[in-house]
Image (cartoon, rainbow over all chains, first blue to last red; front, top):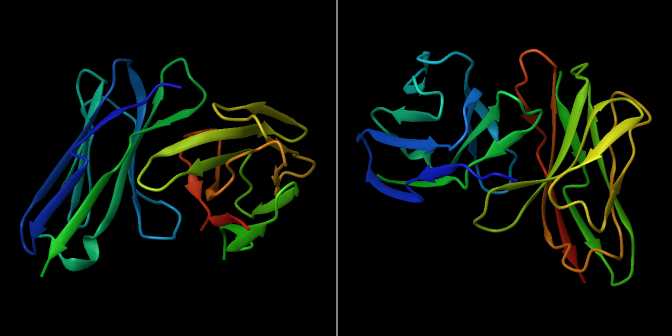
Length: 111
Length: 112
């Protein structure tokens, strides 16, 4: 199956810093989802995007559906220690019935 | 509470043994999915079902089998043909519109 290109693979930041990660695809997507996974747990949905150009916030998190429909980014502002985890993007192609997942971004926040 | 449950949390398999992982949802979702996650990697689709009594192979279906006799349940059997079964298994479900998948807590399978 197709893989999304998610970057960066890992990030090490200080508490209070802002974070940005993104996903790109060679195909046009009609859905972009962002998940967070804590160790040993299932991914939890953070933000869902369904329209090109859509910008959606969830607390300190903001995600955007790229205008080209081939990319999406997630920003976390004023990071805190509990933001630590793996962040996954996922997307669904216009003609597809399944989600494709990125490989994840491992976020470490130093107090 | 509405959600997805997976059991057990940890499962041990002996060589040559089949084991079944449970997944139940009370979200009234039509579609259900099984993913495999290996350390430091993303999610790979094993099987999915969009409706009761129907399911399709994902990208890594070999050595696995599923059934979908009830809307709420989508058990995954890891057969002895799966030579490298040690992984974290995640079940998910989604409604048809919009298709947003929600995950269960996962089952970690270990081989003795």
